[in-house]
Length: 495
Ligand SMILES: Nc1ncnc2c1ncn2[C@@H]1O[C@H](COP(=O)(O)OP(=O)(O)OP(=O)(O)O)[C@@H](O)[C@H]1O
Ligand SMILES: [Mg+2]
Image (cartoon, rainbow, N blue to C red; front, side, top):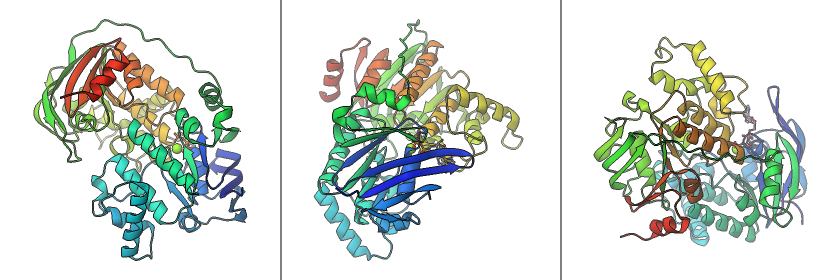
């Protein structure tokens, strides 16, 4: 069948750096084509070429078999190409409807509202058009992004790491939605790091590495091991976890209650203690208070009751930038919204933490040389790729490399407590394994490490003790080695 979209020999450079080299990629109507590759491989860049955001330096594009030039994102949209970006682009202060209107200029509001409702019903995705986009959860924002491109008439739908920000259940629902779109005749491109998504939900798989195509295959012809080798170009060695002596309590939740910024139920009366030299994992089905617990801990919202102690000091009432939080390193779930300032440079983003701690003088008399030296060392240590210049804007990093930058910053110095929320989401296999190693190293150096993840395997892999969060309460605790089935049961059965 004719391709809905075909990219031929696409080359794209930024300055002297070649991000894509002579790449071919195509997708047919009715097909899901998965695009895989490690952080910085060029996946988003290729898709940005496909949706008209970047003009290629060489190569050409065909739509429905016709050679064509795409002049800008609006032109791509008019030709039926819609992209749901890795980092959502909704205007937070606008309503859902206004966001959809903004993307569909020139069409009457009533028509757009009707079309959106109709699509939402057919796809089984509920939306409240009057709601302010900024108050939506991540999965809801994503649904609006998808509706936005569908209402605009997209026939080629590009999903850039759509499940990286979702829980397992939400991810599965999205995979089904995506299959539904393909069955209805759309051509779908799925950019992902999750091998099971590519193997379970796509028709074709392309792997790229360092801007070049490595292989084009199908789920039937492939398997996780082969794909992994194709993605990273070498096999991964897993490190065994060393056992260390557990020390004194360093992070303590004492009867903490609080609400997140979502206005949802929140957590109530949560108590647990994490000792130095210990990784405490919080398991739970998404939406059982994980977000609210994280927000209260990192100071995005205030606890309504209880104490949160780091090395005996209560930080429950402290705001996110309060120096009282100095002893706590945090890797938030939404690395873009709460972790990085995209318009600021790599070195500025890196130095925020050290500056709060007084390491670089003050903002007024900022020790730039020292900050640059530290940043360069940390970037090397954490294998943050794609930094060609420390003064470049952080927004230019690939999604996964931006995360690695946040992680590198948070691990500076010797924090007493480390908090990581779904720390490997959006990271490729190698980077994910490196982050796990870092968390273990922090534990081995005596920190109290708290990990929240909706991925039970990640919790089991890392934790020395496990708490289960259900309905905003800590309802069970387990020592490792714990049985997966027992924890699973605790996650669903509670009073
Ligand atoms: N506008 C830009 N200016 C400079 N460099 C860029 C720009 N956009 C992307 N790059 C660089 O091109 C490379 C490929 O980035 P890209 O975002 O395509 O990676 P990716 O495969 O999507 O990775 P990830 O899985 O981490 O999202 C990276 O080294 C990135 O820093
Ligand atoms: Mg990307």
